[in-house]
Length: 129
Image (tube, rainbow, N blue to C red; front, side, top):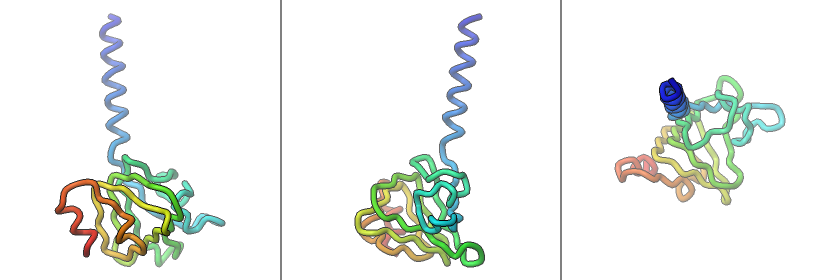
């Protein structure tokens, strides 16, 4: 009976781990006093700053908050980063983003040397567009 309980607990833990994998976190922006702050939890759809398990989407907020993210410093590691058409992201000099996938259909200020794509060469072509 104990082995069944242990096995059940292992299955539960495995399922919880997979639930964390690959969540989508969408930029909302506009939280008072921190309107463009990447590190402000309330600027994100999941109520938390993106991490290595998140697919990050910077959406066009021109009809809502009008505030796009600015990363002022530090290194951010996310699963993927997509900047949609009409949207924008700004990385200041002491900031960089590590990701496995980068798609930019909008504007990315400072991304030329500060977004590092850690996957296949095919994915890095999105950075050059």
